[in-house]
Image (tube, rainbow, N blue to C red):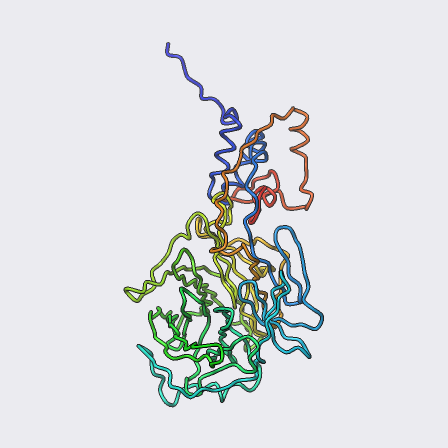
Amino acid sequence: MARVQVSAPWSWLPSELLGLLFLHLRTRADRAVFPAVCRAWCSAARQCHLPQPSPVPWIMLPGGSATSFPRGETFHLPDGASYHNSCGEWLLLSRSGYGYFLMNPFTKATVPLPSLYSYSYYREPVDFAEDYMVQENNRPGTWGYKCRHDISVVSLVVCSTRLIAAIVAVGDLGTIALCRPGAVAWSVSAREQCRWLSHMVFFQGKLYALDRNNGSEDLISIDIVDEHDNSVPRVSRIERLIEGISLPPQQDIMRRCYLVESHDTLLMIRRKLPYKREHCRARSYIIRVAGIEVFEANFEQHLWTAVRTLGNDQALFLGQGCSRAVRVSPYDLSRDCIFFLDDYINWYWKWKRETTSCGLYDMKDEKIYLPLPMVSWRSKILPATWIFSQGSQENEVVAQPEEPEVVVQEATEEEEQEEELQECPDHHPSSFEKDGQMYYGYCINCLYPVIGDA
């Protein structure tokens, strides 16, 4: 009679092997399910020593305070100061009696800037290449007819220590303004028509921006004449390099697009925001985040190429004024993820159900998560923005993360029973749902925080 072989239970796997398996799981859902298999697997997951948290940006909140995650450190703006936008480690601030200035909140360095209502106009022509001409009766006009009130800074770029560029706008229409630190006015073209510019980035020594004049996300390059410190910088040439793809006009979908430099390539990230009109108010809409698409600029073929992964060592942070790629550990669950902020602020827009104002799109499973449930600034006139401390940006982080160490300690029966009854000290939920089934176990927020170690 043949002897029946009985497989050993999964709980008998060596703890060292279980720890290695846990570290190499790719998604949050898998890491959440892992400790729910049995007590031995839960214990092995908790004993894993993950690497130190990757450098992450701070969030500048509308109330004038900035917060770091996951440590929760805070700092506040100077009394009476208001922020308008950010660029890397710089905040664009204004203060009564001090005018407009850039401030590095980490070093306290400041750079004086002209007022947003002070402009000098140059009349030299701007050369256009592959640009679309707007019909005469639909032309939006030059900036000289627009800069009257309610000027906003759509995007800010510190190109160098002597050149700063910004997209200034009234409503959706804007233009490119240039200045030197300490100048009394921004330089703006007296002839260039205003455009529907949405984002700008300094990439490999040149300015690039997204132009929606044609109803799509077109990439334009901007050449600047910057001869010497005493000259007035000006735009000399605008070239349309890539024509975007327009969405069908009948679709009720808004779009938010961002430019990010990543691995020496230029990416465009597009957030799709479907909306529907409420019956109770004529101009009230409910919007929600439906998905995120990533494209790479192909300069040779002049088109956007779809991207399916950011790589195993990067995360993207998207914001209205500043978006950056950050290098992370290959074992950090924020790798291959995109963090985004609610940066479409208007009185007649309302968000669907969710209370948080920070989301995360995981390109590994193409799902959206809410990593910071208590961070919200909805119904504010100004959205939050990212601040990137030195060392948190892609090009500044050069040290390769070390492979995590798996340290396993055998627990006694009494310790295992106590471990099973422990509650999260931060009172995080200890249950989750996957494929219609509820799982209960160790706090999933502490087990695999979105940013940081266990």
